[in-house]
Image (cartoon, rainbow, N blue to C red; front, side):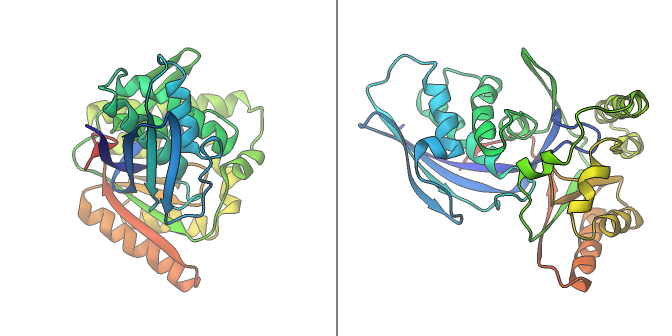
Length: 307
């Protein structure tokens, strides 16, 4: 096999209570990527469609992730070209850089005969995230590679647990058309939190994980509460409180900031409710005259996939 075409999915990270440790994979929003084996050694980004991003390998998240992976292998007498077709806008809060990073390492791994497992690939994709945000976090790249929900139990050593999604769980994500860089969204965060807030937060993380395993939709909803990050970041997102309230009024189990924002997600039981939430969210931004994109998606059980 000399060439592979991929779907590189969008993701929702943090999921309210799980800052930097929880994420889920979306099913119908994502980029496409072509990775091919070529005679010339190294990694080259030859085409990017849909976004103004650098073609230089060391300045592109997919290139940096790919190089991190190749550094661990014996020197190859061939190289790789990558074409990226971006559908996820940078700074949207649904894992644009993660999709590119995950796709690059997955594609190269396939062309090499899978020397690494999907879980192994996370550590390399994280290097792309480090370039994008200054922090090698895994809460987007892990679900992009593994599918379903993922929990990063530890970063040192890296320990990731994949969790199946309850069958009827749907995500609705609205992206107001402003760009909010992860690095900027991180700058508003405090380095210390109160013990009271921490206790509430880890109770919700435990509750959310338990709710996923037991398929208890009400418990999932009760656990989607962010005591620490959302109060600081929500002020950066136009209409956040109104969007969140509207989601609840239309049947959402819970709602919050997707990743570092400005996208806002809601989880619900069943597609009909998810569609209803999407319409209600749309109405809020229509009245504000703010352009937006909206996605309604099942939880993707597979992660990056071959097209």
